[in-house]
Length: 302
Image (cartoon, rainbow, N blue to C red):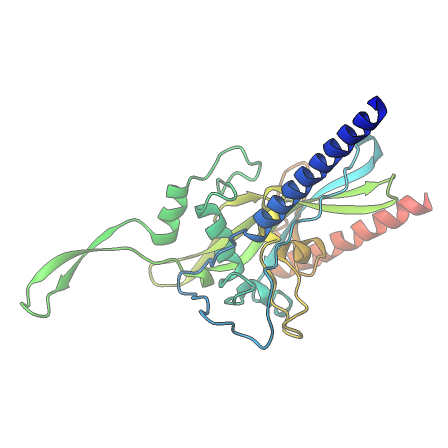
């Protein structure tokens, strides 16, 4: 009888644990399926009716964790800085205005929305080492500008009155993105590994007359921290509306076009700081790219 009672008690405990596990799994699934990605552009309105020929399910994605790299396995490392020009044909997804799958906004709008909602932390534009946080108020000052008082004529009375105005942020003012990455040869994996460390949108600067005078970082983002956010938004595919990848897949797959403008050096100088012309900078970037490829080959030959 004691054995029978023990068996019944064990069965009840097992069933109880199973039900609890199922309940926890169900709650986790419900939580994942209820993730509110939300539209990132206030002008984008989600359709009130099913806008399509078939039923769609919510796409809830998560960034695939990086494989851990041990310091003892790193035989060689080089830090590289690149720039992505969104005006290049291969980089057109960066300026796609958006739809229900891309969050209803362009890539820069996705980043700004995530910063404003507190999903990710931004860092100072001149701080690519991520030591000083860039507050929401500072970002808003850049986005909408500081309030300016202008005199406007009242159409009814003809009198001049003061009106406070702000300049709205134009997403088209972001024409480039800057990334900082480490190129590593891991002897455990037996191959070269490239890991993006930081990402910064570059804001075009114009003179009072509207002439372009250069660009500067808007803010810096620590890339490992923003991967899960990037995994929630899809990249537009001009060939197939169904076969889309997430922004995290896009960066991890290196589908963007870029050029190297700086590599770690004793002077911490960019190529153009060394007196190179724009064409020489591009040629030097191509030469460095080939050197990195040859370095991986030399590791195997050695």
